[in-house]
Image 1 (cartoon, each protein chain N blue to C red):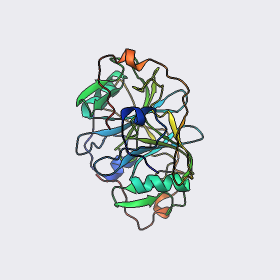
Image 2: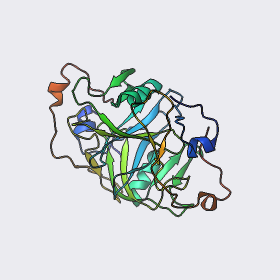
Image 3: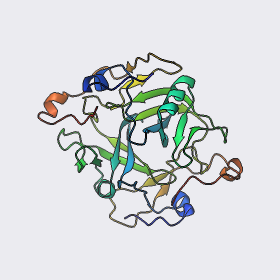
Image 4: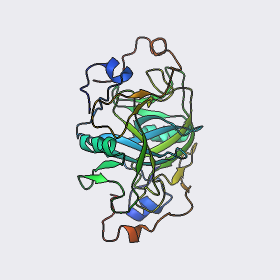
Length: 150
Length: 150
């Protein structure tokens, strides 16, 4: 499925899929809502996760905290259906447009629910852009540990 | 400008900006076109680049290949004007909506100019989604080396 990286021309201007995985074997993934372009989450895939995502049309990530392939939505029910996959110029980042109900383990639709004011020097107070949660995280993830690390 | 990370509640549900930089001191950044939501590029910022971006309203990245703070557009003229900055639930990824003419060193508006067909097992041939380049990269970056690594 993946082609060996041979030349800059092939990587940048070709039609072969020749992704670059980093030293940990991962590639960063940007997941957006196919309806409105909002960024839902930023994650990572390894070779197997990218392969399974392309083959099945559902999102598989590599969970860095749990060190496993992670079929997004398997626990919550909020599967991410792939609408389109894109790759960038040097093929070291992936963008996927998906259809899903919610993506954020805190309960919001998007993980990016807070806005950072600009042209400030200090005392930044962020603004919540999603007014309400779309699911109850405590119920949905009952008994599972929070993936956020301090 | 940045607050110390103290608790999961503060990080996920608070208004303090408490970004998490990785072992290399970097945070991944998703840059989108504020007009249509298209992802333009995937990059990285260190503390100083994020600080300068917030203060000035123009995008500064950390160049991993050149190992310098990089004021995007300084060479090409295609400055990225910040429209909005968002941060994710665990504050280890940044999404910025920008206004810019072009973002990709190959000459396209977006770095993500190729689409990967899904539900395929092998022999993937990508499809070009941007039909033409918006600038002549050879002229604009004359004498500079290509950042793409094989």
